[in-house]
Image 1 (cartoon, rainbow, N blue to C red):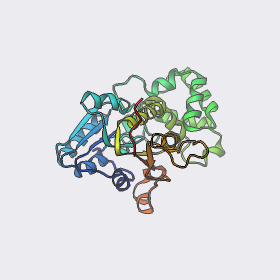
Image 2: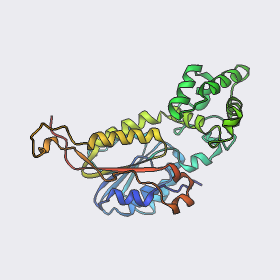
Image 3: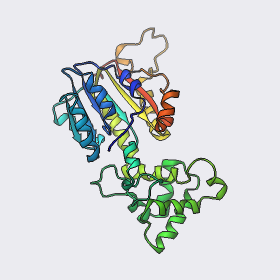
Image 4: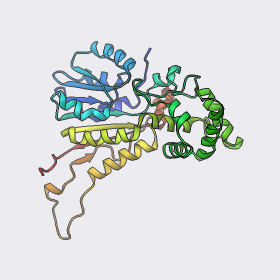
Length: 315
């Protein structure tokens, strides 16, 4: 069963400041945790949900239909959010939520190949219809490409050693399973380093997952598009789980909320120079002690929220 505990759920829903007649977008439907809470608060409003995992969609659709029919599920990567909404006649919305990363059921489903804790075929595709998988990357990418992925997406300091070990093993036979890859990674990392800092394969698996699903560029595009889609008074809430995602979110939010450089002697900021957005969270919200105890995924979670306060100036 697709059981998933949404991280920072109360804080996110409160931060969205939901209006009962508003239009909302859940870019990461998953188990439907955020969508259910949004839907409960709508009367005449509507919720649009994005996901590219058919199993998640089927389960979430049943859960949401028990609340109301004021929702539409769109089978698509959230990078297509703006175009998909426009096709449905939706130009502006009142709130958008991103809950990034892999949902717990995807990790816990051994067949998906996301986890180093289960022996499965190397896969890691969030959308099972796409062709690129972890198997292709591990078995066909050149040494330098592998090093770049491991270092760029996970800051793995043993990137070269791991890439060399992969190269060496795949000359004998293809690397087909998660446990095969785990053993190769363990072999490549010096023993003292293996004994500290968590599971030795954690960073490599993270890097492969990000590369397979093009997660960072997809998020960057979707976040930029969300700025265009949100109406005045509307809010964007983003939950990140690692520093690369949070860096993109933090930079984007800082850019659209910062005060402009003003000429000396200008006593009042004219409206056309004021930032279009304001931060609702000055610092990211993190999980409290109770949630940290109950949900291990919450340890690295950060929630950032901004609100549009002015429309863009007409060009």
